[in-house]
Amino acid sequence: MNDAWRLGIDVGGTGVKGNVVDTTSGELVAERVRIETPHPATPEAVADTVAAVVEAHAWEGPVGITLPSVVKDGIAHTAANIDPTWPGTDAVTLFGERLGRRGVHVLNDADAAGLAEVRFGAGQGVAGVVCLLTIGTGIGSAVFHDGELLPSTEFGHLQVDGHDAETRISAAAREREELSWGKWAKRFSRYLQVLEDLIWPDLFILGGGVSKKPDKWLPLLEARTRIVTAKLQNQAGIVGAAMAAVEGTSP
Image (cartoon, rainbow, N blue to C red; front, side):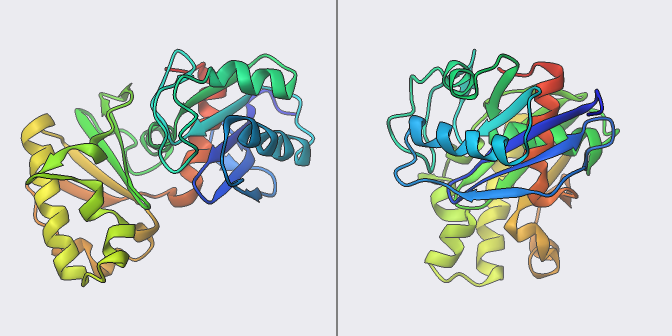
């Protein structure tokens, strides 16, 4: 095993994905393992699934794990697309005991994706304020200033025109309401304008499933800030989790 390799695991609402990452380059160096997220996704059930991913890789080194949750000092404080029993869970202790090891680091899933994009992807070398937004079942956010993460921003829950933003602009909302790309882009542009007035970013990076087909919506967005799509796409969470296992990023 190379000293720079770490196992990154991305816990999502539908799947738990893991791979070994060369943290000097952001490259995946093994076959990705994906296991369906258990339902209900209780802390114990997710810990068992994470352990199965670790065992599938026969991995004995440090592990980074993302959660769709605000994570501070290793404690999960919210629950998005996982079981509502998560808040208050000591996630670092939970996973550490289940895996039988130290060297476990846990962080928010969007923060992990942002770490990867800023180091190896669309935000590489960009000075100032960079805001990554992941567009999926909800809206995740990660904000950086000169490459330094400001964790747990949760901008998907900003109130925009009287609504929780992600209930109207997530990919799930677009599908649920059968919005055209034009109507969705108008809503998303309004959201970006609220963020612009709040943090005055130098770059927006948009990731998630919709980033695979930017020609359908990117030209329709209106904002004063430069907008690009994520380069690492679905592997960003895994790469960012692995980076956390090197750098000890457990907010």
